[in-house]
Length: 195
Image: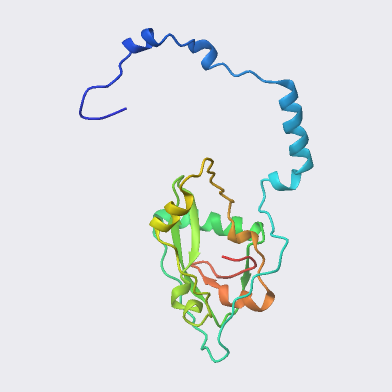
């Protein structure tokens, strides 16, 4: 560890602790466990696919006031350093069926490319300037951290569930797709899945 002060426990402690380091770092494969894991992988094969999953419940619907005026914004310039990554991500999204090109749109939001931790790009529509102003959104209050920690107190096991592209696993109703159109430097794209 790095820090300004001296180490609390140095290498000389390793001799005093008397840990069998060879066994600690040796991975032993149990054949029974391996067979059980393979059976689980086969049984739930659909869950472990690399491609984007699809939620089997109802399709998402965006509720927009009937008297709402469509908002169309032109594409924002993409920084040159990100242009190739944005184009590749648009191609990937189109290949997996998340987006599809459209020729005309009444609603169009500009995109905001977000650079993720591992240097890939997430393409987000800036819907606050378009459909979010007209959509009837659920107003669910976000709980305060203190309330969450109090609720979790006494818990013994915790996990982190990270569904890859979680929202994009939910299909959109056909009528709602028009509200999710994004305007890119290439062309207009409409979402088939919840952005």
